[in-house]
Length: 102
Image (cartoon, rainbow, N blue to C red):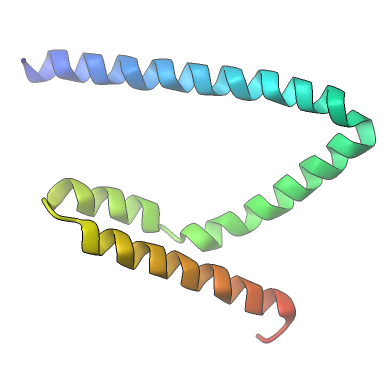
């Protein structure tokens, strides 16, 4: 299979999965807002937004690093374990920061 044809197939799969994911997210948000009501959905949105602020610190670029390294290596099982340990370290550091130890 030619590289250009493979690229078109991969792009179409990526585009279709993105459309389905965003469509499901849209309808789930509508159902959640109806179920929780105004105040409940406001609390949910605030908690979700507040938690996603710290997601940047937990990820800290490790996902992108893992993607690049996994594409160049044949065996990346040791890398996966190291990335997970690093993410757990970041989560524990944030918990200590939240408790006021830093």
